[in-house]
Length: 434
Ligand code: NAD
Image (cartoon, rainbow, N blue to C red; front, side):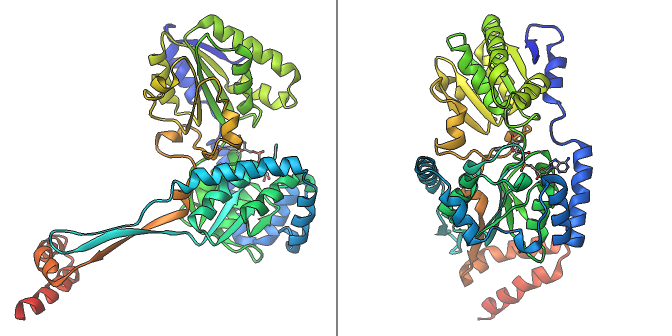
């Protein structure tokens, strides 16, 4: 059973703190394993990647088979039914239309001193896109990673996707082709992240790594940050549903299970202002857990990390939601817009009972690669912005330098950086000498 909390209980704060602190992904044991894997890949390159792929994905490869060949991609794509292909195309079109709106403008202006200032945006050259594949396969994650990268103008896109026992979902390769991905490697976990960051003989290094994954992937991304850019920590999935009693308990149960079925480390939480409704949802979850195909995973996640929290009112729900900073937040209440305005920290918000979170996973348009483990307090879902960077521009005229140069000279002197100051002084002297 999940934990049942009630904000009127005297020990609520301690029990809520335990829910927030649940050990789901950033545990030292995972990090130790990941550190050793990264060191091994750095030291031995392809040989380490091949050994680790055999160990974790039960797949014996040779270096020349790390990447899918164009013929293999073609053959897998041919297995995709027209209906599935059309669904992918609908998703791709909607994701592209949403992300095109994120392209920011360059800026340039001349200030009162005559200095021309501004910035311009340029794409990273090569991006490594992690597509999970251990417990489930995620063609949707191919689109969610690759489309914003393409929209941003990234020239080289490399995907890594684990194929346990050599089994690949043809839709993953179909989505990669649809999105214009250049390279697809059949590897996963921390070894894939290390290979993308440091490169091997077969896999050229990239500049930025994005995408979701399990605890090992999330820990590896943390560790390679600095050598490459990363988008965020998008680890085991989370959903927080705030629902009043006017909902069908079974719908809410399914929404909770839609994230629990990702991973035993996933977390599903219901906050409601009606204790009896909370109980009915918990019962509906148990009923669904009798038959769901992934009931073993979903059941473990619900039992270990699930929670039902009863609050006095929806204001209290919004305040608790901000403390959780969930990846996905569903607002199944009479006025979801009003409640959403009271929420500050959430990766993605789904408003109203006709917006199950799963729509956002596939076809809504917004990105489904989202910050987890409370990192929505300071980061955002994947976007075009993750694949571009800003270069600032400044041009002085003689009169602009005359106007602001002396302040630079003084600050350089105060920092005891003589050459800094003299580089300005020399120019001002030339201007003053005529
Ligand atoms: P995965 O590709 O993330 O992980 C599989 C890899 O993990 C394996 O290839 C292996 O290398 C590594 N691994 C497994 N056990 C290991 C061990 N004991 N030691 C070292 N390495 C090990 O696929 P998955 O496991 O299916 O997980 C997908 C995850 O992505 C889930 O947690 C899901 O919730 C999450 N997800 C998150 C988002 C998001 O936006 N936050 C979106 C989709 C999926």
